[in-house]
Figure 1 (cartoon, rainbow, N blue to C red):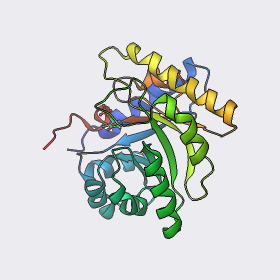
Figure 2: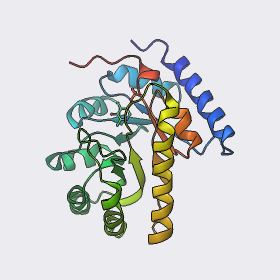
Figure 3: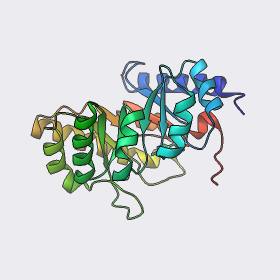
Length: 230
Ligand SMILES: *Cc1c(COP(=O)(O)O)cnc(C)c1O
């Protein structure tokens, strides 16, 4: 199951560094979140043994079972649809939440984090193409939500995340990645809120995302292999 993970991770890190170089950025400017959803704890352990520290999961219950057997220095990123009744459990296990897709959810996170003494780092998810099948804030609502959430004291707003429409040719993702970066730049200069993180790019298009300014790419199948959903 875990054979080949170290090799694939090494190749991906190399490709990430080359993409950063091409865009005049340093090799440390874009980090890798290894998306381990649907894969077992021993696959995560194999990646950790190969030097990977950041892992992404999209379902609270599935993640909790893995995290329970993988104590240590791993940093967990929640990247899936977050139901408000799962917020407390997610805050117990996850330091980063990439998928904050409504003001209500952000408010629940702020209140619950305060009760728990937690300080999660969060990203606002943007639905760039207005896809009805996906969550995320519209670019129009983003400004008000950024202004409000940027003033919260328990959650730290760190940037934006997007899952653009699936494409075959990674170049087709480029305009979406560029749009997210431009939205970020506008919000930063108009509102004076620091949004250093851009979470964008997956197995198929992470190099293009880095060329367009991604600081975190979320890569699953290119590391762990094909997924089979139950
Ligand atoms: C599954 C998932 C990924 C990883 O997708 P791959 O194509 O396997 O790299 C990235 N981001 C999110 C939000 C996901 O749900």
